[in-house]
Length: 216
Ligand SMILES: N[C@@H](CCC(=O)N[C@@H](CS)C(=O)NCC(=O)O)C(=O)O
Image 1 (cartoon, protein in one colour):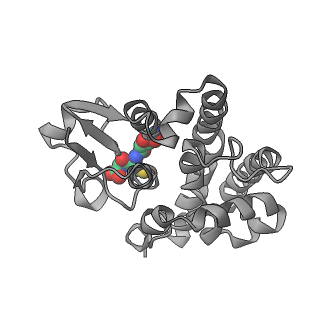
Image 2 (image 1 turned 30 degrees about the vertical axis):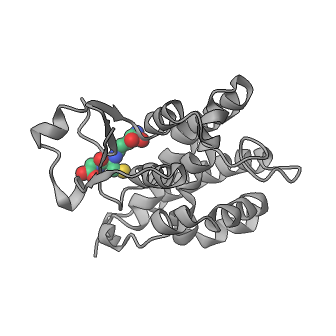
């Protein structure tokens, strides 16, 4: 069945899906829409999702939207792959799901807030107090990740690389790029980031320039 990914590769949420598709070894068509590329008003796109946001994965006529829902969909449709098999095991899936939810609700929102303040706004639009608030929230969430990665645990959900590492790890390249000093307080997160950064799929889809998003 043909897979089609809709979304610009400069979106961190699209990068999660690009990374996962690469790890699963899947081929797909890629329609680059959203942001400066437009296309969210394409009726073919709108038929797939009620929300005009990317990523959307089209799989055999079904539109799957929300990046973490897409990761889970790939796991369900590819149980033969280690990333899929882990999601079929209730104990492993519980840990992976919890981290994915934590990423969506607690780490990603303040990270996005920092990213907008530092990259997507002009100097005169930035607000130091708002940036500080986002940074504090990010540090609080990273402290939780530090605890999750304690005792030498190599990956968020345990000994094996999982969807949780993709969902949350996709934020790390930009986070450390815009605020390199956060590494001072997050040795475990840094070691985990280095482990993820050694993966080819991370290098191809996550550790890439985001210059097109900069407001100059
Ligand atoms: N919670 C959604 C967020 C989707 C989202 O906000 N996507 C952004 C890009 S990161 C978007 O489509 N923005 C509109 C645009 O780029 O034109 C997910 O995880 O997929």
